[in-house]
Amino acid sequence: MAFDSLTEKLQNVFKNLRSKGRLTEDDVKAALREVKMALLEADVNFKVVKNFVKSVQERAVGQDVMSGLNPGQMVIKIVNDELVNLMGSETTEIKFQPGSQKTVIMMMGLQGAGKTTTTAKLAGKFKLKGKKPLLVACDVYRPAAIKQLQINGEKQGVEVFSMGDNQKPANIAKAALEHAEKNGNNVIILDTAGRLHIDEEMMEELQEIKNTVEVHQSILVVDAMTGQDAVNVAENFNEKIGIDGVIVTKLDGDTRGGAALSIKAVTGCPILYVGMGEKLSDLEQFYPDRMASRILG
Ligand code: GDP
Image (tube, rainbow, N blue to C red; front, side):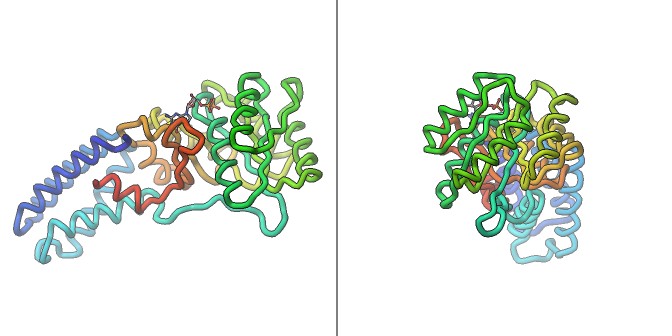
């Protein structure tokens, strides 16, 4: 499970703090040094860790923790608050267009990140909200991806629009919108092609889709197991295409959790959902406060 070792380390630091009746400034500093190490070992971005520790320290000293009734608890609360801040304070929802207008969502990400699976997972969530989603197979390079989307769409009871593999993704997106108009679909989710690495061609293709149809939400899917690479990928996509939100997959397999903790602080883009397993139901809305509580154990 994500954050296991971070949780264990933080709990040790806090146990030490609680066991002391009064805290000196040096006690707090020593504890924060350990918090810093624990975050770095969890693969949290270095700058993010530095700023985090600085904020906690300023608040801890500013709020006169040393003379507080229960100084250990106070430090723990400040760490909790700052973790919540780091991950974006509030839950960010995917924004739908008002009324009966259609919402077009473009899913992006590197190959293997979990994009196609997440697209189907999201469709299931939207269906529960009373929407009528249409999944669109825009990954024309991997016939297996089209098949996979069809299979998952069927499992979710959601229609999949595909034009095979010899059309341009932008044209497929355009045709899908016309199909949605006739068919009454109000959320159109475009499953675009990934590559093993970021490349110009992929970015141009995404841009062409955006130039051809009006995309309301561009969502990036990243793999938590890739740690700080996931953060770099997010920075890159945000610069080149612009992202409205990130979905972090495979948090179930990532024991460190650094990507989930760094993405918002580094890119400014909120995490919308986290993938917690391979099953189509394993997608959880991201609540910064609940995640902070989970991390602190
Ligand atoms: P794509 O190339 O980005 O479209 O990636 P896929 O959707 O094909 O996913 C790649 C692999 O990751 C598949 O085996 C998925 O079952 C798996 N996967 C996707 N999301 C998760 C997740 O949240 N947890 C786990 N454990 N596996 C996932």
